[in-house]
Length: 115
Length: 112
View 1 (cartoon, each protein chain N blue to C red):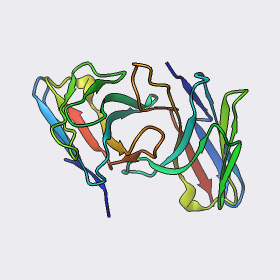
View 2 (view 1 turned 180 degrees about the vertical axis):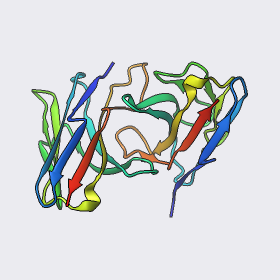
View 3 (view 1 turned 60 degrees about the horizontal axis):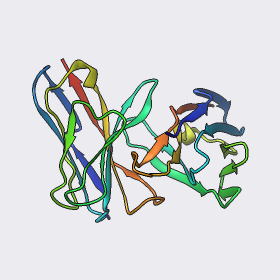
């Protein structure tokens, strides 16, 4: 099955600086890579996603890059703000093929924005 | 607005008791999922359903069951609660494979 590794587990950056979170995946058949933001006491919320036919996608201060050859993808947040403090999860969709469906998640990165 | 609702938000139960966690979505999504979230493990899939009367086991399904009698609801049942099932449980739904997954706000379950 799919395995997703996420680094770092904790990331502390100064307000206004950029933050980068990296994930690797094992299943070359994975073709959908979303990123979720989870605030305290809430469920994860989708913030951006990318499909395997695209190398980069941007949405205001957030961007995701995908390297299919190396099987890794990254989340980039520029001009970080206090409200960016949260736990971020990457995920990859697995080929079904009779096995379990849904997404395989990384273990999360706790992003701390220092004032 | 469409949404996904979990109840209760918090539950304390004793070892050996049967517990059911509710999940209700108003998006009319066919696919529904149950995950548990534990420190150091991230989100792990318990059970999932592609539609009415369809249920499937995920990677950590032992001790759990689900039923899908309509599109909107996927209740999760712990047949005989164990302390290892103390966790935060999230329900999620999506329109189809590759579509965004929408999560509820979770149920924190404590088994004493």
